[in-house]
Image (cartoon, rainbow, N blue to C red; front, top):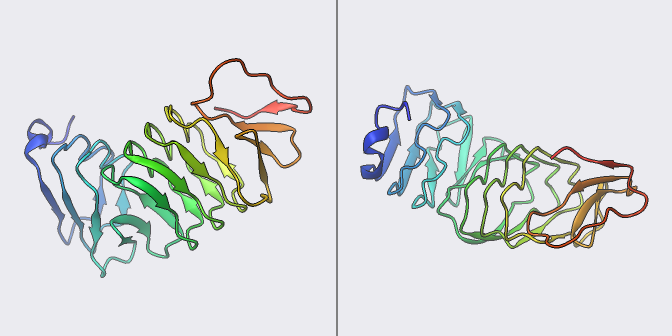
Amino acid sequence: DSAPWYASRSSIKSIIIQSGITSIGKLAFNKCDNLTNVTIGKDVTTIGQSAFVDCKSLSSIDVVTSNKSFKSSNGVVYSYDGKTLVFCPNGKSGAFSVSSSVESIGDNAFEGCSKITEIDLGNGVKSIGKSAFYACVGLEKFVIGQSLSSIGEFAFAYCDALSSFTMNVAGTHLKEEDGIIYSTDGKTLICVPCGKSGAFTVKSGVEAVANY
C-alpha cells in the first residue's frame, strides 16, 4: 500500500510502462480491480513479485517487441527466450495449456488466477516455482508432463477445488498415484492437492514427505 496511486487504484483502467523505466516493483499494481490494459515498455528488465496480483479484470498484458528481457503471447508474459512463463494475468479464465517451449513456471506466475479451471503443463516444463499457482481457487484439473522434476514451496496452496493431479505420460522424475505426486521410486511424497478430503493414509514405502 506504499505506491502513490494505491488509494485511487480502483480508478486505474490502463497502464503504460514507458521507455526509461527498468523495473516494476513488488506488488506495484496489486488490487487494481478495474485495470484492463497493461503495456510494458522496451527498457523493463525486472518485474517484481505479485506486481499485478488481484487485478481481476486484467486478462492480457502486452510487452513491446523491442523489449529484450520479456515478451508476451496471448496476453501472458514470458522471458525473452520463451523458456520461463513469468506471469499470467488474473483475468484469464477457463483452460490454459502451457507452450511446449516453456521449461519453467516462475514464482507466483499464476497467483490469484481464480478463473482458470484447468491447466495442462505439457511435456516441456521441468520446474514449478514458489507459490506459482497460489490461490487458484477455481482450478479443478491439473495435468503434469513427463519432464517435471521440481515443485516449489506453496506452489498449490489454497487451490481448494483441486482434488487430484493427472499425469497422462509416465514421468522421468515424478509419478502420480491416486491423484498424488510422488518421486518415481515412491519413497518421497511430493504433493497432495488441497482439495483432497477425508482421512488420508501415507502408503507403504514412503520414507519422506516433502516440505510444504
